[in-house]
Length: 247
Image: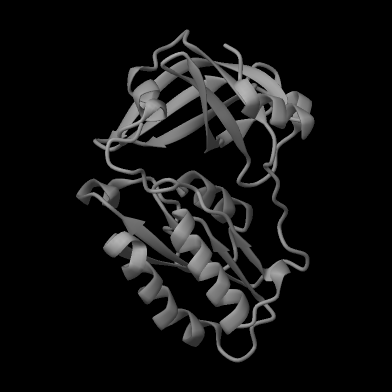
């Protein structure tokens, strides 16, 4: 399958193409599915970094359609990892629902990059949801001793069963039900974050990854109103609410 104009652009920006093979699948909840994959040599060629993601290519009525997904528990020695899908309507979710061992899917690595802040933070504040759960877990894994407060937006009752790695005593989980297109999450974070940060904010790091609009609003708030420097804030919109009927 060709990758169209998007593939051409990614090539210009030094995107690297790989092919993954499905080795298994798990239905984690009724709205969440984990797919196990062999990496086609990618990890040995590129290495691994926290919150690492790749673009998967799906067929959309004969046209290429790409979406980005975070690697879960990548193992360079074995050449394996998993990916987790928050299921909804759309080509990526359709593929994940039907994926079986032996299926192959093309991928492009371009745009992913994250390093732990230097000096490392002594406090971590995370805002995420089911779509960014693998990245949230990767962040907690790479800073296991850092006290963390996690605002986690939920959409379904079964989201309480998602495999969020926030069980340590120094992790505080704050679930927030999605309401008014993310407005409830914005309100919760704005109400609590200033007090949690306190006056001395030099040791804190804020990581935001939810829908694009919510991420944009919270990133501007943290940087402009709370005054955190750019190197102490990482914000990336992980999804856009689809228009009715969109696929």
